Image (cartoon, rainbow, N blue to C red):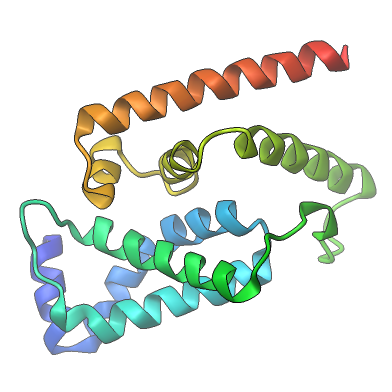
Length: 180
């Protein structure tokens, strides 16, 4: 069953929505996580995203410029934006800790340093560059899907992505040289 057929069945019978959820859950979760950097909040916002998708699925229509993937990610983007508007500030990654008890203190420290370096490098990119990198690597979206979601040309997104990657590479190399 292809995605269009699955969407049409899910519009009539919500049990088919479960399959759509399975297809997109990890991508949406990853996308939101790299915008929030907090697992419990990511879980809440991912749930909120899928509730909104379920409630508005009847209104979704395939168009040349609108794929289901782009539509779901746009909803997730709006949920994250609403969260930040309500919160009025961004989460300080230093306050995030892993309380699972499954990692050694060394592993937790390494994860924190990794997150700090990534967050610092990402924060130096423009908002558009951050979004494209997070969608590409965090949500594992293809550049043409990102272009549809953002209502931009494939060429514009590709250029934005490669400029962002080049900037990240330079920043991370500088970080490595400074730490030696």
